Image 1: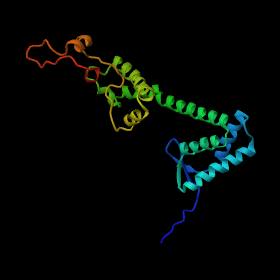
Image 2 (image 1 turned 45 degrees about the vertical axis):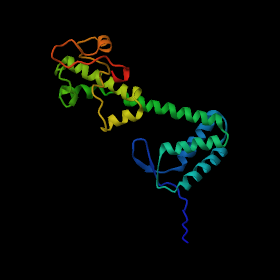
Image 3 (image 1 turned 90 degrees about the vertical axis):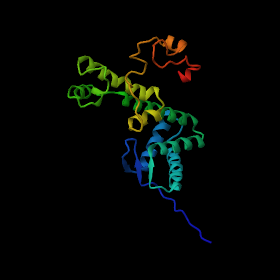
Image 4 (image 1 turned 60 degrees about the vertical axis):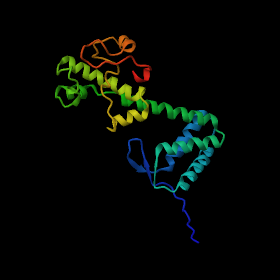
Length: 214
């Protein structure tokens, strides 16, 4: 009969939100917990030290070499709740959500100078992406404003996983700068009520029976 003992150990590396590895530092966990406690006036430094010890204990039993920031913050949340510091836990959760939104908003920003120069020097593939839009002043305006609109759709309209997939190149959402029907020479009302018809010698189709198939 074989037995194996897992030796508890702390992670050696922390993967930050930028995807970089930095040295794990438990003092930063304590500082964050203490800051939260002071903000809510729910506990002092001694209690923060005890809470940090609990977090460290959980981390050490994971026995992994690398851990993500978000996972550590999840454990801090659980520790605060388990210790009945509910006011601080709620504040900590709200703080995380606020900063997550701020990071998301930053991704929506477009560097104006870079965007314009990429168009002028024709370094941006979008310059030739639309056959109905030539290289011109009007094209520059549409291209620059389109980037801002596209980033907003990806960050605030599509689900996060869809936005990430597009940004990573796993999928491509065409015409993100124009998230609406355009270049149509017929009435959408007529199309939905009558279908495609009226052109001799061309394929015809009846109206859709449901919006999901329209």
